[in-house]
Length: 263
Ligand SMILES: NC(=O)c1ccc[n+]([C@@H]2O[C@H](COP(=O)([O-])OP(=O)(O)OC[C@H]3O[C@@H](n4cnc5c(N)ncnc54)[C@H](O)[C@@H]3O)[C@@H](O)[C@H]2O)c1
Image (cartoon, rainbow, N blue to C red; front, side, top):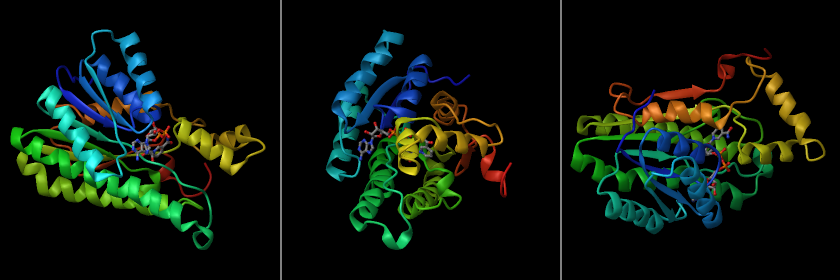
């Protein structure tokens, strides 16, 4: 059981999907929450959802685009102003982009994926680190993907950005562990969130359910993952208990990334 009592946990991309699931799990564990998203309406719904389940939670919401460095500076400042510290940072906001072969990939979409998935993650770490350093304590969890350790057809910028997140994770882990700051990444497989539901629509617009069934069949567990199953691992990585795990990329994919071919 992860223990985040009184810890200040900052989560980007918190309005839905993996970010929201982790916010709920962290609230259950007693954390104080700073929730960031550029979807203002979704963020308010997320806060209401958390408070309906855990009425005593302390929840700050901040509207920000994580690919804009000034917005990032501001979400860090607002969190510090309210809570005085950032103990754990779940650097989660990301987008998939479109699905297309490398040569046909739309350059504007390519750049947007890199801006959010790579630079957004970098800005977050850059502005959170000094506060963690000042307390000689911190936990950072970056969100890579199975696409950060393997190729994925028709998703070149996504895969490139997630491999880069793995690289940033390893370097942050090397450079800042001496200040009590552990940095790890997760590599989820197909977890049923709004992002993945959208991907199934792109893969098979006529029958997204068939695309979903095909993905499930390719997994050793014969099902997709649930956001709560990711959230539990993330909350461990954000906790004090994660004291000697540093610079790792934890696959949360039902074992699928170990497979060569069909299972
Ligand atoms: N769901 C999966 O199967 C899966 C697998 C591997 C990796 N991931 C990664 O997990 C993370 C979360 O994915 P998800 O499935 O929950 O996605 P999602 O689309 O369901 O939710 C993402 C949230 O992030 C927010 N967001 C996106 N870009 C933002 C930005 N620039 N600024 C602020 N908020 C922003 C969105 O508004 C949304 O609320 C992403 O980094 C994604 O690449 C997901």
